[in-house]
Length: 349
Image (spheres, rainbow, N blue to C red):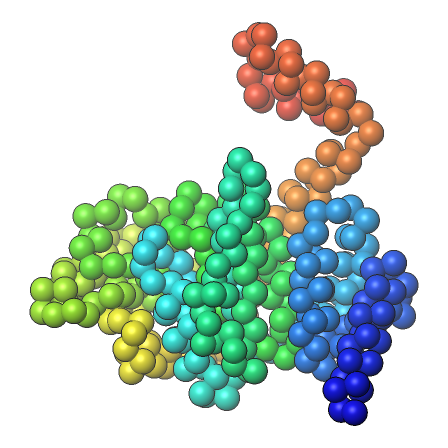
C-alpha cells in the first residue's frame, strides 16, 4: 500500500514537471515546491533543464531559477581544484562526510572534462564518491564541462543555486583539474582549495598564477606512505609558499592556509575542514564574505552577458549561412579569425 502511494506521488511529481517544461507558471511553482521539499527527481530534472542548450528551455529555466534565488543565500560554497591525480574526488568525499557529521547537508557538483571531438563525458565522479553518494544528506551531480573553460560547466553557478534551494547548505564544486582558465571556479565559491602532490614543486610553472594567488588553502595531498613521502610533501609545500610570498596579498586580505596530509586520513581532513569553516566564519563577521559575494554577482553578470551575446548572434537567422560562407572563404585565403568575426557581425546588422 505504501509503495503504491509512493509511486502515485512520484507519477504526480513527474506530471507537474512536464507541465513546467511547457512553460506553465503553475507547473514551475509546483516544480520548485518539490525541489524545496527534497524531491531528488525534481532537482535532477531541474539541473538537466538549466544545463540544456536548447533555446526553448531557457524561459522555463530562468523562471525556475528566479524562484530558486528566493530560497537561496544560506549556503557556503567550496571550490576544489588541483593538478591531475591530486586526489580531488577522494578529498571531497572525505570532506563531505565530515561536513555531514557536523550537521550539514552537502551537494557535490563534480565537473568532468568533455571530449572536444565528440562532446561526450565519462561523468565518473559519482562512481568514485560511492560512499558519499549513498548518504541521504548528500547529493552528487557530475556534469560535463562542455566547451567552457574555467574548470567548471557553463551552468555550474545555476546548478549550485538549485541545490541551495533544495536545502543543501554546503556546496562542493570539483573542477576538471588545473588548466588554462581554472580560476573561474574561484569566482563562484566562498573558499578555494588547491590540492597538490608531493614532488610537484618542480612543476610550479605548469600552474596558472591566478590559481596560486587566489587559493584560500594550499594542501599537499598524498603525504603518506613513509618518511620519504612526507619529506617530499613538505619540500613541495615550501616551494609553493615561496612562490606565493612573491605575489600580491589576496583581495580578501586573508593569507592562505598551508598544510600537508592525506585524504585517506580522516583526522587530517577534519583538521583542514575545521580551518576552512573557521575562515568562512571569520569572513562572515568581518565583511570579507559579503565583499566576495558582491564580486561574484558582478563577475557572474559579465559572464552571462558574454554567453547571452554569443547565443544572440548564433540564433540570428542569417548566422548559419554567413558563418559557413566565411569558413569556406577562410580555407582558401589568408583571412584572419578576427576578420571573420568582424565581417560576420557587420553582415548581421
